[in-house]
Amino acid sequence: MRVIVLGLCTATMLMARVADAQMPLPAAKPPDGATLFKQQCAVCHTTSLSEPMRQGPPLLKVVGRPAGKIDGFRYSDSLARAEFAWDEARLDAWLTNPQAVIPGVVMAYRQAKPETRAAIITYLKELN
Image: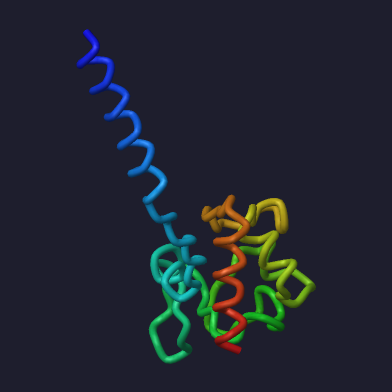
């Protein structure tokens, strides 16, 4: 019995030392806006005016651009009547819930994570 107790004590001490010796995991990298855009937005949007338009309008130079006003794209009536320019706050609200920004729009994408929205918006700003 004494041998078993000593063995368990030794095993416990060794496990504690191994746990102390483990290195902490590195911090997670913040999301990359270009990658997120390609994964989540590029199915419907391009970042080039020379590419054929997709389901959504091209997003090159979208920050500061009047909403619903790019030539050659057919916007929903409600978006075509919008009277604002895209800025960071409006894009953030739009990516959170487009229908809350402009009722009647057809964009179905919603992004609940603020860090993902911020990374995508930062990437779009870089395209200006």
